[in-house]
Image (cartoon, rainbow, N blue to C red):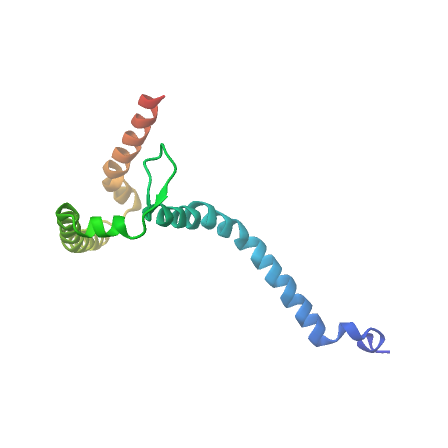
Length: 142
């Protein structure tokens, strides 16, 4: 007697469906911590910040809803447009220059130096300055 005839629930289609369902549940279990972290540390603060932007709130009293008044005020402020212009100039100039210089340095380093040890020694000052500044900041605040 064939096992599928004895138990009609064990047909190949049912077995594949059960396996796919289990695989989906395992996949969900793996991404659940990331989804919780995303919700707690990104989505909730973003939505709350958006809500606060529609209120007049000094953090000492209850917030009062003002609608688009804050946005109208910002768009009429000359300092906002000046800061936005400076930011755009910085991004349009700084990012391409850093990218090109980084690629040129990487290509030059690859062509000139083949030893991993020498490459490590060449990048060591960059790494050490970051480590020293971070560890110095931790020790001075303790």
